[in-house]
Structures are given as structure tokens and as C-alpha cells.
Amino acid sequence: MKRLAWSREVYFAGLLSPAVLSVLLILSLPIAWLVRISLYPQDQSYDLSGWSAVHYIKALTDDLYLESLARTTLYSLIVTLGTAIIGFPLGYAATRGRFRRWKIFFIVLPLTLSLIVNIFGWIMILGQNGLLNSVLLGLHLLDRPRQFLFGVGTILLVLGHTYLPFQILSVMSVVAQIDPMLEEASASLRGNRWVTFRRVIIPLARSGIVAGSTIVFILTMSAFIIPQLIGGASVQMYAVLVFQQMMTVLNWPFGASLSLVLLAVALAFAALFRIAGRTPEEQTGAVAK
Amino acid sequence: MPWQNSRLSLLGWALFQLAAYSVLALPSLVIIGASLNPASTFSFPPRGLTLAWYVKAMETPAFTDSFLLSVELACLATALSLLTGTPAAYALQRYRLPALQPLHSLLLSPIVIPAIVLGIGLLMFANLIGIGQGLAALLLGHFVLTLPYVVRTLISSFSLFDVVLEEAAQSLRASRPVVWFRVILPNIIPGLLSAAIFAFVTSFGNVALSIFLVSGSAATLPVQMFAAVEHSSDPTLAAVATLVILVTGAIVLCIDRLANLQRLI
Image 1 (cartoon, rainbow over the protein chains, first blue to last red):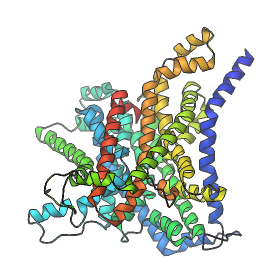
Image 2 (cartoon, rainbow over the protein chains, first blue to last red; image 1 turned 90 degrees about the horizontal axis):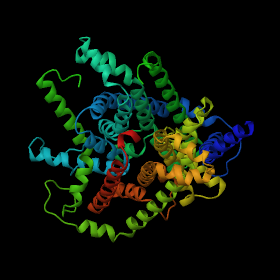
Image 3 (cartoon, chains in turn green, cyan; image 1 turned 135 degrees about the vertical axis):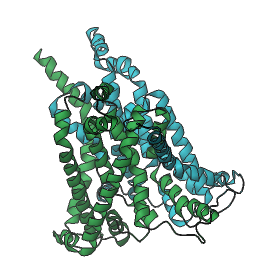
């Protein structure tokens, strides 16, 4: 009997280990090497040797990088809040309402579609010869084409649009588990629909909003392709600065430091979101199956 | 719905949803429109219908070569993820121990690690161990990127598959490989297929990791499109993007037929 239990453990360890070991190695070794690179004192990509924290000091004291970090964090919070406000009712309706199948299709398609396709579409909508200009000129609301690309508002719009499906799906996954009986019970106790929504549904769906917000926040913090293609040089989002240091300036140690600062801030906020979402969730956890 | 107290608010709510879904679909619709428009720069309303840009796309080696590389990479990454992810998902679902929770989180963690950090790290690491940029480095990145989707999808498959069937086979002295190949795998084929398709689409569309890991001579399709978007707004690109939209859309519909899409996300 004892031998049987042991072999069961070995069996499950054997099933788990290929995936666990490969993820562990593929994540930890490159990030460990990135930490090492960030601690070289040089400002280049060759002849690296020695140890120094000089790049972290620059990343955390230079106004350009600090301001970019603050702005990027602010933008990420705006996009997160915006997708939560729009995504929650959409996610709720897509779980409970009519036309579910088609709604889910239109939520999942942009998510699985390559990011670059989405960006290309927005460039054709917002560009100087784009759809928006054509329509506005045709309606004589503009007398000459305006450039809608290359601004903060546009970047936030495209970021929000791209990441909204994550928020909707995250809400759907928890709303699907809320027993409709709870809503009916609240209604039968003369809670009007707004009270039901605020006192029953939102508290029960809180964990989904928190999970979706965490993903959207991290994705926005680390976005560099959308800011680069939609924003041009006008907005220095943090991940764009990291990209430039690594791929254009070729100052690897500094770029590595910036990328790790970005990782630390993103994970710190993810932890904050988690704490913020926890307390009432535990109170109601027994009700939401 | 909670706010449908009056007809007016009901109408407003319906319009809000209609607007939201239209905006979600808008970029794709504009691309499809532009790909069929004979004008060589974007124009609205369209000046006619043509398939010329599709012909031109097929004749552009930069697009066809990168398409083949993307397909090859996505197939390899999907195969690796399924081979390692299926047994892992099974173990996580069947052998529930609090101690395994960190392993579960670890397998899903590539979703929340910023792509720019993982991309740069993999690039630096590939240079360190001498494999450099190219297919091998891309494969490492895409493998960890697709694994979370496989694990998550299959955990939900296994939770729906009754363990009693396996125990019955075992009590009839079926060996573990026989249980796997004759009982477990045939019963989770829909889950396996949707996991495979999800992994494939995730890898096929990825640009944030790939941009660091492609070699100068061979880019994946999204990276090729990234370079093309930066330099021009040629309708050939719209034709390529439309093909990507149609293929992805068809694949998403396939998953929906195979398994309840909502349950998998």
C-alpha cells in the first residue's frame, strides 16, 4: 500500500516536471541574465565586465525616465479604469443577455487577431487620408484633413480598444458562476435593479474585475508597439524608452535596468490590485459558488 | 439587466452595446474594405472592387516566406505546448494539493510577465548561449507563451471528464499508457483541439516577443507587417491583413463549434 502511494507521487511528478522545468528555465535564466547585464558599469553592448548599480541610479534619478515612468503609470491606470467601466457591463450582458454567441465571437476575435492587424486598422481610420477624415470632410465638418494620430488621446484609445476584450472575458468568467437565483432573491426582497446590481452583482464579480484590471494594467505598462506606431515620437512611454535603449542605442546595461524597473513597478501594482480586491471577496466567497 | 427599468434606458443600453461591438470590429472592417478597393492609397468611399492586391500579396516573397515561417513556428510551439502541457494539466487537475498551487501559478505566469522584459531577456540569453536570433530562440519564447493557454483549457477539460472511467480501466488492469491512449486522450479530443488552436493563433499573431527574436534574414509574418506598417500604407498590406483576419476568424468559429468558447477563456 505504501509503495502504491509513492509510485502515484512519482507518476504525477513525472507528468508535471517537463512543463514546470521548461517554464522555470525559460523564464528564470533569461531574467537572471538580464539582472546581471543591468549591473555592468559600461554604456554599450560589447566588452562588458565589472559590477555597478550606476544604471539603476540613473533610471531612478534622471527626470526624463522618472517622468516617463510616472506618465506611463498614469496612462495605464486610465486605460485600466476605462476598460473596467466599459468592460464590466458588456461582460455582464454577454454572459446573461441575448446574442451571446455572436458577442463572444466579436470579443474573442480581436483578442486572437495579431496586434499588428489592429494597429494597421486604426492607422487607416485615423490617418491623414483615413476613414475619419474622409467622413468629416464629406460632411463638411472639416475643411482640410487633420492628423488624428500621434497624440496621447489616440494612444490611450487604441490601447483601451486592444485590451478591452481581456477585461470583458475576465468579467464573464466570474459572472457565469453567479447563481441567477441570487439576483432573483434580491429582486423579491424589493431591491430594485440598481440596488441588486450594486449590492449583489458587483461584489460577487469583484475578483473578475480585479483579474482583468491586473492583466490590462500590465499589458499597458509594457506596451511599446502601439505607442511607437500610433504615437510616433510625441509620447515617450516607458517601454518605448526600453526598446530604444536595447535595439537602437544599444546601451544594453541601461536598457536592462530600465526593463527591470518596469517589471518591478508592474508586479508591485499587480500585488496592490490583488490586495485591493481581496477583503470583500472573502466575505462573499461562500455565497459565490 | 439591472438598468432596464424604462424603455428609454433599454434603448440606450442596446445602442451602447451596438456601438461598443461596432468599435471592436471597426479596424478589421476597414482593412477588409481597403483590401478590395482599387485605389492605391486609402480612400473612402471605395472606387470599385478588385482582387489585385491579393495577387500582389501572393507574389511578394517577403510576405509568403514570412507566412511559412510563422506557420512552422506556430506548429512547433503548439506541439511542444501540447506535449508538456497535457500531462501537466492532468496532474494539476487530478492531484490537487495546496503545495501544487505555486506550480499552477508558475505555468500561467508567462501571461502576466511583460512581453518586453521576456523578449529582451530571451534575446540576451540566446546571444549568451550562442543560439542567437532565429527559429530556436523564437520557439523557446513562443513555447512558454502558448503553454498557459494549453494548461488552462485542458484543466477545464479534465475537470469535466469523470475520473471513474480511468479508475474502471485501472481496476481492469490497464497499464498507465493504455489508460492514457485508450481512455483519457480519446475523451478530451475537443479540449485538445481547442487548446491546439488557441496555442496556434497565439503564436501566429505574436509580435511583441517575436520582434526581439527574429533574425535579420527571416521575419515572422506579424514582424514583417510591423516593418511594412512603419514604412508605407500599401493596400497589399491590407490584403495580407485581411487574409490573417479571415483565417483567425475561421479558427475562432472552429473552436466555438468544438467546445463552448466561453468556458475556455
